[in-house]
Length: 285
Ligand code: HH2
Image (cartoon, rainbow, N blue to C red; front, side):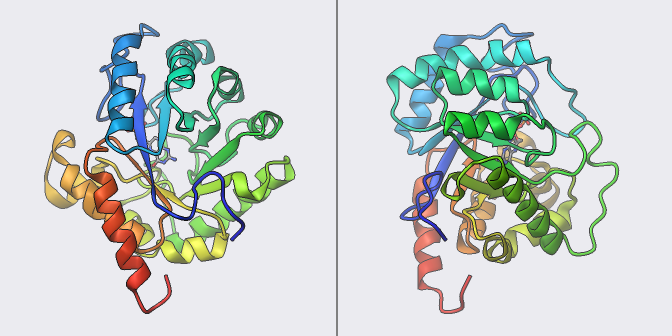
């Protein structure tokens, strides 16, 4: 694997989530009450807390992509995210990613100081996104998603979810390369919970090493507070920290280079131990 600049290979990157939405499934409404009514001061304070707790990257989003969610207009998504990115780019040295599928939102965020585009659609939603990312010299995280968040849970069909996700992520990566984004600035993500059922999510996390080997790029896993953890434990969304850490630790043991979490406190310790165990293992991941 070429030396990655998106997720450095010497440690696991903890990607802290900052959702500036009224309706995200677990943390909606904390910083945006309605429309684009953003509490900038509170969002900056949360970002600083995430950094102090060990985040290595901050993922800022202005559109919920939970199952059944509707698309947010571009101007609203920009009004929610750009002010925070502008403020953080001046005060923190960590890379900031913009969680969006849309070229116009990414462009505004990159101009404001973001360094990474986090596209859950893996370049399948907006044909202009790859070019915007390439021209800005930014990095990209390519997620796996068939269809769109509004309908993705209705038509789930996989024969071999690990093989199919790996192949589709490789195709996304090839699109990014063709658009001029260099390999060291590309990461992939199996899209936990995006058009997948419980058994698919478990298969993807437990066998992540296969995806990483097939795609040949660093892998991010976002299991944080997701509904499959509720299915397994019976816990509501605000009581899934331990379940998130268990899934994340296994993902790291299986090969994850980065994890995307809402609960950053303690995540770095968990990741350090999981990674040390991966390095101690005798069978290859
Ligand atoms: N999951 C969510 C959003 N963005 N990006 C990546 N790369 N990987 C993920 O698994 C991922 C993601 C969904 O979680 P969240 O942001 O908490 O919820 P919502 O979409 O409701 O805002």
